[in-house]
Image (cartoon, rainbow, N blue to C red; front, side):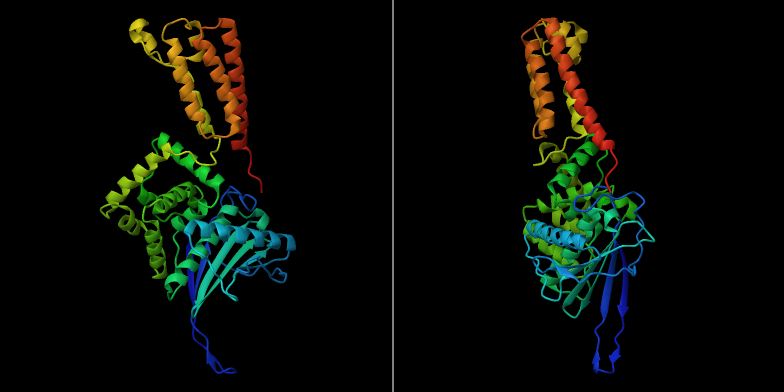
Length: 420
């Protein structure tokens, strides 16, 4: 959960100007660093403990506004400042599209993003704080050692501040909203199609292994170093929230709850998503939603070891006429074994059923998978026609070699160290 440090500046009399300064309520956010980089380079597992907001004694350049004048970026490196000015506007547009809300930051209220270097501590850190000065909302982000900072953390902190901005703009409030981890991270995870596809694949893997978590486990507070391992669940939870028939009303209630100073959790979700408003009803609906993910193919599906395992598991024939064959052949028959039995009456139809099965596995996945499926299809079509054993052997050998090469490339990419 995002850690929060709240302080206040008491009222004081300015003798020279004869006026009173307003009370400021500060919320400092420290969100842990993850591994996968989208807009910023990737980070290391050592980057999990973040310091309090403090000065790094690093001189900053004159601030540069983003193209929409909603973000003010400062830092010692003009190229990095320019890069973040582009990233901030692009991310803001994505958040607006996802929430269907226009995010306006009036002149003088731009979200300030400070880029800093800390030679004494090379870790990448992303911090944020916000407070209210009357009706004016002041928000600050600080990215320390950008080259070692993580993009998903950046996006989550950024999304949290924008959610606070929307809630206060719509419903006011005396304090900056406390945005829960599941909400900030969930919104951030839905802003990029590659991340959405990755999360979808991870959730399917959990379902297939029987390790689907309960929703109470997803929304509970966790240690900062646990957040990065749960981001795919936050993303799926936000997707469920976003898929509600009355999405507009649900999101409006969410903003109202945040503005009131509450942090929406399990009870809030139960009231809005469960048919009977109970945590038990919420859990049933959550499990139903997870199961339905098997019927969804993301627009940008990723080729992962899970997909390759599913293809490998589909590479067999199932005898469909047990009365005409030996009793022990009702079990799946591997492709190499099927060559010697190519003249048995069940092989023709079973081969075509296998073709349908493997093509269903590959549906929607990247083009790299298609040559492998096509090579097995060529073998299975020849098997269905009862071609010669030597010819079938060559076709299957070519298909297996193609599959082995793809497995090597995918597994190699999975195990490769993340760039920094």
